[in-house]
Amino acid sequence: MEQRYNLTDEVAYLDPDKARFFVDAFEDLNLELAGDRTYSRVRVKRAFPLTCDDCFIVVQDREGKEIGSLARLDALARASRQAVEDELERAYFTPRIQRITKVTVAYRVPRWEVETDRGARAFEIYSSRRDIRHLGGGRVLVQDADGNRYEIPDYRRLEPASRALVEEMV
Image (cartoon, rainbow, N blue to C red; front, side, top):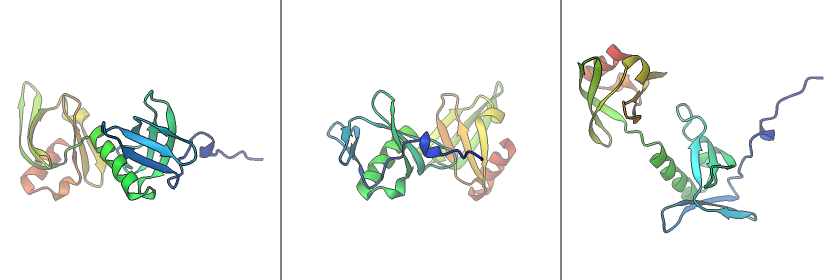
């Protein structure tokens, strides 16, 4: 008889109807599980940050021990969902590139000057091959020399000059 693998044997899913996330006076994210207990200063992480940013959210206590996972953020009550989304936004701060002003190369180090949804930025990358990732569907992720990430949701929708610069690098 064939034995089937059951993911729920390894992953503790949190019931979104019994989980309430809230931010306290110290701006720390907390989790209250109905009928169980309250966890202060929890951390939330995306299990698949590049491909599924609103599903499979891992919740850890302040020591980094896993409390459980949320299958989908949209299953949470609005206030809880907003608290988790705000925390994820802080943890995965990723400005979206809207326009590439110019790319210059000095001593084989590309320097990008861009306009993002968070304002103008200038950064260097180590290597176009290693630090620019095409994720499909036109989505591009750029990591600068300091480890900061920038996203282009769909480079094909950039204005022609910016699109040409990305196509040259991807």
